[in-house]
Image (cartoon, rainbow, N blue to C red; front, top):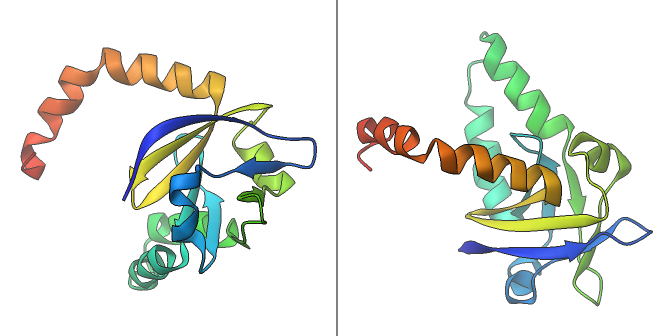
Length: 143
């Protein structure tokens, strides 16, 4: 399980280090794709396969299903960690998430999220301010 928040720097070659405690989970490969809220999602190969199965079962007759599948799949790229636990972020994904030098790697159960540090801080301010409303909305989900 991925949890926690980690600060890293993106180097001049667009390489991003993955927290050392998670590196073994990516031994079988990883997939990085466009995420929601202007961040990137990184999945282990196993978790990616689970997501792809769900996407494949979405009705192609619904525009929202097609759009979400396109975003997740067409924007995805297979990546491997190098010997120092880094992965190269493609330019199109770096641009999508407005990534600069300072990066936040956030663990979210079955994936990592990659955020620009300033965008992460802004997102946190808004979501923490609205945390009571968010929590009340989760009642219907049994949380």
